[in-house]
Image (cartoon, rainbow, N blue to C red; front, side, top):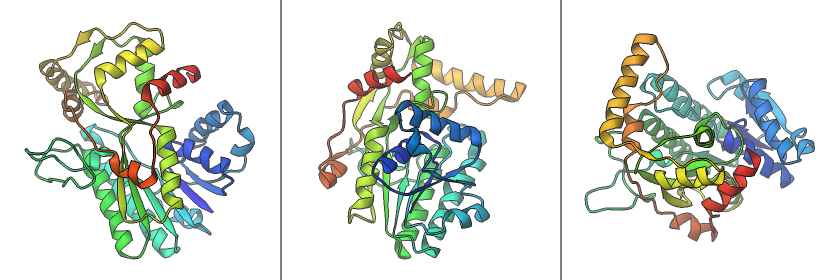
Length: 330
């Protein structure tokens, strides 16, 4: 049997669907019934409600040992998708608790229960830092602890260290480092929120760029890696390097909305994150814009995806075409 953590998130839900379509027996970890309904909505949209009923749901959390004792019974393979995604400095404790400690728990149970293989969903935020003579980030780019990183990136890197520890102790592992993942559903959370913002009429854009990929490509790669003999490797999962301005305009055009027209320069976003910090302290509100996010909005990052393409002979789907497909589901 296969265990999926983070089964009610974007990647986990689509992974469940693909696994069940392939005839696998799946157990899924969830925290609340409300979250399960989001996954159920995806299956209903795909006309696969019958497959949804085959999921063996276990309520629990990767930071709760008793629930993991139940979840890991008779498990052969584990897809570890559970994570906290936040660039708010106030969430540092939760990020460390879930992303690092939670992953350590998963690795320990995999070892104790003789799990055959673990696939961990990391992030491009955990990849290394370019030196002056380098211009593209690969899986071999070294992490420089002296350079500034977001708490999210630090905790995903820390989680990878736990996975490598498991590998050294006898557990077969693979790690994927996806870029920003685009996919249908979950419109109010994570990367999918960009569709909701643009549909409401997003006026602003910045000139940064980063790697994007589709949730379909992510889960296809995960399943292929788990079925292969590949282990002790990490793979950058990036379909294309897309400027934020271009992505915003492409989505706006697909939804028939007015394209963003106001350029937010670095000075403006620098002022904005400071004002947001002041407001959050005065009115006890959750941060909407952190310093790390403001910096990322103007950073142009380049990632090499040749390793995964060569390992699996994989061809990524077009982001533009996928956005058109997503629009039909909104």
